[in-house]
Amino acid sequence: MSLASRVSLPGLARQEITCPYCFAEIAPQRIPFRCRGQVGRRQGCAPVLDRELAEYTGSTAGASLPPVFAAPPRSGGRADCPDCAQPTHNRVCPECHNPLPTAYCDSPGRIVALVGAKNAGKSTYIAVLLHELMNRVGTELDTSLVACDDRTIERYKRDFARPLLEERRLLPTTASAATAPREPLVYLLTRTRPSKLARTPLAGMGRAKHDALALVLFDTAGEDLRSREVRDLHLRYLEAADAIIFLVDPLELPGAHNALADEAQPREGTLGEDPDSEPINIIARVTEALRLRHGLRPGERLPVPVAVALTKIDALGPAVSRQSALHRSRSGSGVLDLDDRSAVNEQVRALLHDWNAGQLDLFLSQQYADYALFGLSALGSMPEGDRVGAGGVRPYRAEDPLLWLLYRFGMLDGD
Ligand SMILES: Nc1nc2c(ncn2[C@@H]2O[C@H](COP(=O)(O)OP(=O)(O)O)[C@@H](O)[C@H]2O)c(=O)[nH]1
Ligand SMILES: [Mg+2]
Ligand SMILES: [Zn+2]
Ligand SMILES: [Zn+2]
Image (cartoon, rainbow, N blue to C red; front, side, top):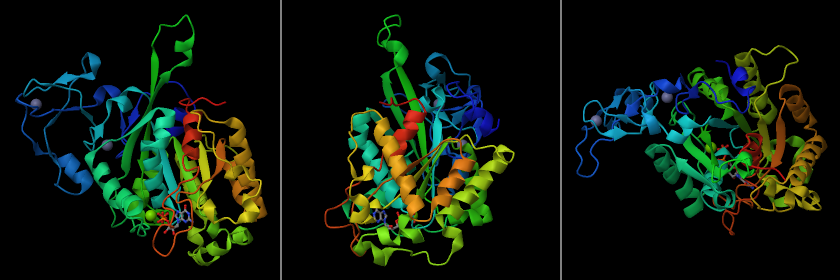
């Protein structure tokens, strides 16, 4: 089924589930189970080498697991292992054998993809956004963020949280995806809230709506779309995405020079002359790929909601911050503040036009039926050398794009 037909039916449960690891499309009744193995004193199947999983991760480490078996699910989404007879509810992708959480199988999971040029601030943003969702923002919104596999937990700690948040070191430049892990970090964001229906007197009491969103984060540069091996996986990733967050570094927009704080000026334009890494070119290349996949005719716009965020807005000088919607704090009330949303959108649009980057806005409006502009700062202040600024990591509006997407997906109310 094409992405276009999936997205044009909001609210209807999809027929197929997309694996957030390998992007295979799976019929729900075809999702196999993994035996729970030995649990406490109950005997279960012994671990065996899982070839599909080892193939996916490129390593046999961590791939010795209880066996996978196909079975029609019984009530409660469980099945009994044919070998050891133990019930299990662990589901896996039939292609790559990565775990598919029950909440993801049950509700139409949405895949959110993140794209940006080298140095746009992707790695830093990933580190900070996930931390915010696991803590402050998660509490505010009553959401829980759970890593879908152990490798994600490991890599988040080792490559993101520990260096940046604990040791306050800037993250090293991401290695090209040709050598770096080709796996995404996969999280499930779930939110339980009373549905509108459940609040009416006619509906049964205590009915809650469970919604799930898969955050699938590849920490690779948009430039990598140039290399054939990486492009394939990434195109499948983008095609499977139900929403995209594009990160744009304002320090790379030549027109923004005068808006930068004095201390930010030495850091601007680090990408030099490579036109492939200019924000608009990255966005254009991704857009072109998406149009092809969707088979759009000229003049038709892509239905995928797109959040375009200027990163590092702490680097903007006082000229911008005065009477700025961007520098007002979000109310933090667990709903999307629609007035605030449109004020920020308009301000970012005005900034782009001031900076002679109005073509970016124009391009987005021609290509996407549903896009929104954001400004955020993952660090909250300019780094000092290769370290986070003295005040530590103080993210600012980092969650905004995600709140908007939750709102667009009907998982968050607007006010
Ligand atoms: N001032 C400021 N600089 C940032 C921020 N986030 C990232 N940077 C800078 O941008 C550089 C590249 O960020 P990184 O996340 O590695 O970009 P990636 O290549 O897209 O993964 C970092 O080393 C920081 O110097 C931010 O929120 N504010
Ligand atoms: Mg990076
Ligand atoms: Zn898979
Ligand atoms: Zn078993």
